[in-house]
Structure formats: structure tokens, C-alpha cells
Amino acid sequence: EKDIENKLPLKGKKILITAGPTYEAIDPVRFIGNHSTGKMGFDIALAAANLGAEVILVSGPTHLQIKHSLINLIRVNSADEMYDACHQYFDHVDVAIAAAAVADYKPKNVASQKIKKTEATFTIELEKNKDILLSLGQIKKQQFLIGFALETENEIENAKYKIEKKNLDLIVLNSLNDKGAGFGHPTNKVTFIDKDFNIFENPLKSKELVAVDIVNLIVKKYAN
Ligand code: CTP
Ligand code: CA
Image 1 (cartoon, rainbow, N blue to C red):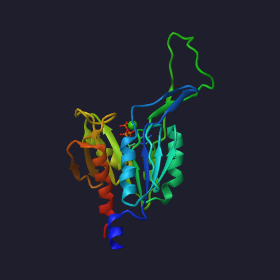
Image 2: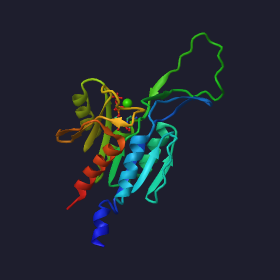
Image 3: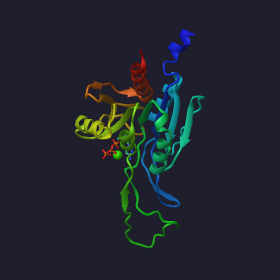
Image 4: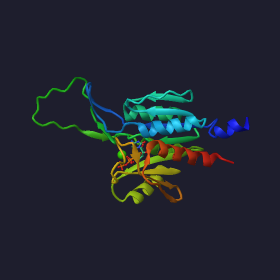
């Protein structure tokens, strides 16, 4: 029995994970989105569930599938829907990980009918989406809160700023400036920065292995 416990070090822990892009409607047939595949969040969900964690995976549109008795997959479309789903579960979780590539802006007005190509130029006014991770950081109690950061310049400095602004315990900094890292690639070059600004650099790794690293940090936190 002790053996099984040791193999399932996250048994009894609840983890909320966001994944994928969000789609922000322009009209009934069009949206603003991004190239996120959802793979990073899905890999973390699987790694955590395989260690016994109960996972709530809130994902934007993706072709990925996942089937595990410990994973509850909630599919959403927009940032507003992702925000609502996260707030529905956040109070009851031990850990929350924001791996989604949430659209920063959404169309201010959504046309109720398909927009016709009558104008020579066409402007869509955008307004800021709610920041899901920021809002979770503002209400967090026991939760260990992990964010991601995608930066192309002043990476460490910008990531540290996000830790403070969003009240995070850990940030996973994603570098896009190495070949073979980021969106649509199976590998990521990530740097972990904790809330005391300790920095842990990693070599280029598969997203599966990055997921295992993140989950192992959670295991370490709860090990006694
Ligand atoms: N995030 C979120 N809700 C948003 C925007 C971002 O939950 N509306 C989360 C992401 O899932 C990620 C973290 O915030 O974990 C940082 O996202 P990132 O795009 O790097 O930073 P932003 O805060 O959006 O700032 P900017 O894009 O201007 O760098
Ligand atoms: Ca952003």
C-alpha cells in the first residue's frame, strides 16, 4: 500500500489547468484566434493525473483529445467562457496552472449577422479581455499559482514583473527566440522563476518533459 502511495504522490490534490487558444467572435462565422495547439496544458494534465492528481482541464478550441479517469475536460471558446469556468472551480483546488494562450483583446461588438464585404476598408474595434490569471492571483488563498510568460525581449525582467503583478508562486518563461521552441513546435525552451526570483534554466526539451518538470515541482512542494 505504501508503494502505491509513493507512486501517486499527488493523490487527493486538485489541479486546475488552462490550455489552448481562445477564439473571440467577430460575427457568427468569424473569430480572432492564435496558433496555440493546447499541447503544453494537455501534457501537464496527463503528467499530473498519472501521479494521482484530480485535474480540471479548461481548454479553448483544440483538436487534442484526452481520456483519463482523473481528468475532467471542460471545453470553452472565448476568454470570457474560460474566465467563468476557472472561477467556478478555483476555490476548491490546491494548484492552478495557466498554460492557455488567452487572446488579449476581443471585438468590442459582435455582429449578429455575417458581415458583408461592402466597405473598401474595414476596422474592428477591440477591447481588452479580462486577465484570468491576474484575477485568480487576486483571490488566491491556499492555491499554488503557476503562470506562463511568452516574451521576445527583456525576458527575465518581464517575467519577474508578471510574477509580482499576478501574485504568482512560479512562472514558466517560454523563449521564442530559439529555433524549435514555442507555438506549433514539439519542444520548448523554458526557464522557471519562483516568487523569490530564483531562476532555473532548462535545455531545449519536449513539451512532455517540460510538463513532467512542472509536475515534479508540485510533488516536491507537497512532499513531507
Ligand atoms: N493570461 C490569462 N488571461 C489573459 C491573459 C493572459 O490568464 N487574459 C495568462 C496566461 O495564460 C499566462 C500568463 O497570463 O499564464 C501570461 O500571459 P502573457 O500573454 O505572457 O502575458 P500578458 O499578461 O497577457 O501580457 P502581454 O501579452 O502584454 O505580455
Ligand atoms: Ca498576452
